[in-house]
Length: 208
Image 1 (cartoon, rainbow, N blue to C red):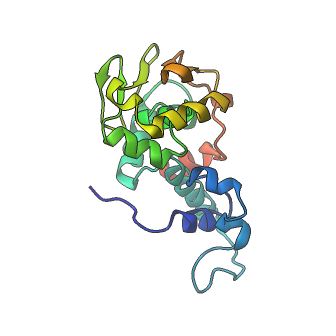
Image 2 (cartoon, helix red, strand yellow):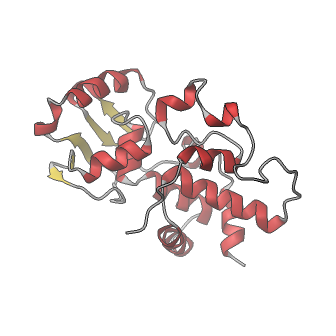
């Protein structure tokens, strides 16, 4: 499967804002967007007039990069959202939020979505007691996400349990850091999704 292997800091610089792709590092003075707040590349510091299409494209790319989704998969999410009931853009974001790797990150069991994706792939998490190693697995209302018993004793998860206890969890999730477990109370509403994306621009882009 194809995947991005370049510097994630370049992605933040390309979008002109922090996407928090490297977890705690993004809050320090080592963050690339603070040190070089312009687009990467030879012509990154040039001023450019962005077209309407360019603005829409940037919103789509921003959403893809935040959630770590490739183009084909993102387009498939959009197609499903466009056929579902409700506002297409809001349904799209709710689908992205309900990915298992994102839920693990939201619960505080990983420092970033990239780390959450890696931990899920390595089989450290279970949904309703069954091992799930697919980061794109979509959780549903009432699902319980937990660290598998054999992984709880690892130093990494003991450290993450302390970090999770200090993290604020969105209202659609219920977290139990002591047991490294969380529950999906309900699917997220738009006001609970704190990603800096204007989803209507994505809908306009794909509607052309």
